[in-house]
Length: 387
Image (cartoon, rainbow, N blue to C red):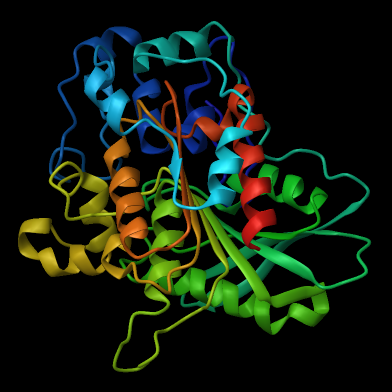
């Protein structure tokens, strides 16, 4: 069965008879569920939470518990309501297009994929002649590894370009920079320099390696700003799932004082676009899964302060960059409450934010054609306002 290469990203798009592995970058760790035969899916128990149960991959039954689970009326009434604390944010929310099909359960989503009622986007689309694609640019080398980035920029611009750095998901254990090539091309067409970057995943190095790697990618791009016509003073981060967590953490902890950096480690950013990212790793609802321990190297019970340090919400302050939070209301990988909790923290510190739940959408909805228009709308309008 064909698989996606983490770095080159060549990947089939066969959905008729579901090519289960082809959905891995779209649905993150939860797509492992798709790799089971239907009768095996029906026999799975709820999510295994320890590496002992699943030694080297995310739990295969990770989302089976969601199959018959619907969103409660209370949740829909409280946490699934779009909101913002600025007039600009409320204007953006009011003008948003509809969000595609509305699913009640993960089983509904699977059925729509199997019936080809919804289809994934092509994550490596053709690059238009108006865009320059700088692929496989190495920004960091180490012992037995190197990290690269893909940079998409308009070929014609009369001024330095604002930069959007995109960070892939995969529960910190999988994925690659090619997962955001589609959005890199789209952002370049809107007049941005758009870089999608690699970082060391958990089987290569534990936290804080991924954080350091993304920071190093940003610094590399700033150091080469003149070469690529980038404005180093106008940088935003965009990420989903694990990438959503990383862009939040990097953006908010930039101002958290450390012994080495009394004013914070940086980089100073203009805006954060976060799709379904973990904001509070100490939350009992999310802290005991395999990928947490794989990423952090320890169980929560053994290192609660580490989990707190690695939680974006810990670092929110009045100096945090404006943020837009985009998440599906039936996300069973990252609970909707993670984005809602972060929105409240941003509001408490008077940080401009937009909270935009996608009703009836699952994890990684932004990789499916029916919801791409709405996702791009929010990205475009938010960046135009704050970057």
